[in-house]
Image 1: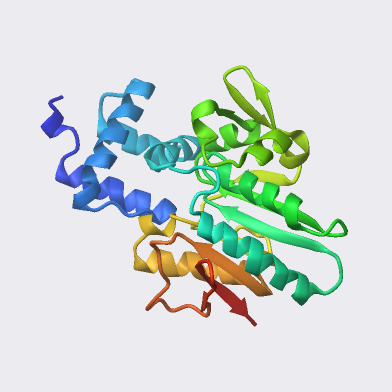
Image 2: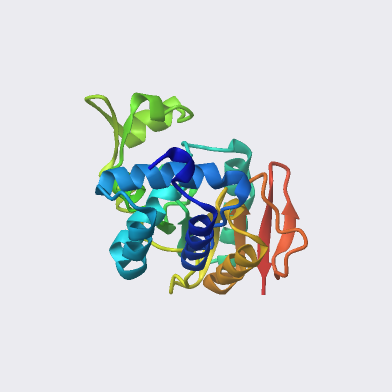
Length: 271
């Protein structure tokens, strides 16, 4: 099959419709080439020659559909990504939550679209550093990529992946092992990694903070609004939402309030 015949217009429309229906991720003619390259790779892995045959497979096989959706997502992340947001989390959000809750308790956090785990591990290290000893925290970290979740659960990162971690954090929270660094078990124990498709309700409630950064950019406006409103339903009455610094809820039908801090902007739920 020649490359220019690989994914004709009809099949492109069928694939993009299925992807949107199952995940909310939008492929347009502009990023069609990304879908084509990921699909070629997937078909090679599965030794399938026809895009039509594979389409029938993912329609009838939920596990293979999960694997396909995994293969088309982009998983770019790093420790302490967008430091100003973590500054706002440390210096504004956590102190506010302590004021709101008043009595020592547990801070519940959701890292949605956690990729290979750098974000939830960053959050866990920060909270270990700054929370009063009488307080605890729980982190749920979810992603649509099973491959990424396996990496996250393992907690091993090559030398090239630990850029951005302060030296004192690296010494306190990682063990140097062959080829890289391994996250300490006590930090790992604070995080529950789980598969989750943001198109669906996670079933968890009363999160004090949700991080969903650089994820909704892959959705169209309708899917973005649905995801954001599901976050609202999953969050505590007084809580905070971080999205990517290039993302915005402006013009979206949502109840979240825009919040500008000294360090970064975010959104809050006051209900």
